Structure formats: structure tokens, C-alpha cells
Image (tube, rainbow, N blue to C red):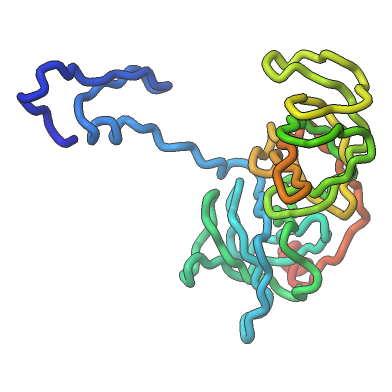
Length: 261
């Protein structure tokens, strides 16, 4: 683990190819040193799905969630989709310590001004109002793989989708094409139904306002599980999203002030 030993003459060490080049070593410590740390997607637009919203006496409304992409800082004007509420972030905390900024992977709580607990809820997505703000999805196309469904799935099937922290029923409005799971090639256009083991491109319509993103742009908000009969029936990735162009929602006074600054 730590150093070469004489009693293992047969062990010649290890080597592997990395993006940074070839690495070789002998011990476990060498192997750990050779691991390339993952790149955090902090250069993308902010996306923070809410896990919960608390009302704390003397502080106010505190949404809590994990930063998936981008950064969140105090003083930012943020928009919550699909509630369409815009407000200013007063402070950002993690484990009761004030942060300068929350980066991807941080579970943060942040204090927002003039927003009631009724306005925003779990499953909403917080984003920067000036940089590619999140919007509600009118519909989206997804590649769905059916894992175990006792019957057949056809148009009009409406199970519950678990996507990031949102649990919302979505209707399979149209099966667009059946595809080969291995090659990704289309095997049938507009199939009547799909069954266990099949993969298909499906147009889906959420039953309630919901915010999702394409997997290519924001992977954490672009994958989902389909739950029905107390089990995961299918999994999928979102290929494209048709956003709703909503009229301006609620903008708080503090957001208007910060916008002027």
C-alpha cells in the first residue's frame, strides 16, 4: 500500500492511460495520487433545484438545495422556475457558516427577501435571472428505456417522473420513434406501444408546471426515473425542451432595487 516490498517479486506495478498522459506506479498511494479530480461545472449558468424551503424566525425564507451548475453568491438576483418568482439573495450558508459563494456540489441554504414559503417549493429550480434563467417546460422530448413494465406503454400513459428534486406526473403524449438500445438507430417510426427492454424517443407533457433541462446542457437536470406501481418502470435522458415563454411573474422590491444597481 505504501512502499515496495521484497516479498512480492512477481508484482510489477501498474500503469494506465489518462487524458493527461500515461501514469504508472507501484503502490495504492501512487494510484490515489494519479486520480484526476473531476471538473466542477461552475462556468455554466446557475441551476439549483430546491430540496426544501424553510421559514426561520428573524431571518425569513430560506430555500435549501444542492448547487448543480454555476455559482450562487449574496447580492445575486435569482429567478425560481416554474414559480416565476424573482428576488435577491441576501446571504448563502453551508453548515451554518456564511459562504462567499456556493459552487457545484455544495448543499447550501440561502436567504431570500420578500418571498413567502407558499411562493416557492421543493422541485423548483433557482437560476441567475441575468444569465440564461430557467423556465418552465411546456413539453420535452426524451430518450426512455423501459426497464420492467408488466404491460405495454402507449400514448397517453401518465406516470410520475422523478427528475432532480421534482416528482410530477408527465404524460407520454406521443411515442415518436423506437430505437435500438445499442446503436441508437431508429427501428420504427411512431410505434403504437413499447414494452420492457425497449428504448424510444417520447414527447412528454408535464401535468403541472415543471422545470427541466436537456441532458447535454445541464446533465443533473436532464435525467429522470419513471415511477409507477411503487417501482422504477423506466429511465430516461432529456434530448430537447420546449420552454414556456411566460409573462413576467412576481418580482420583489429587493430584486428591482438590485437590478437598478
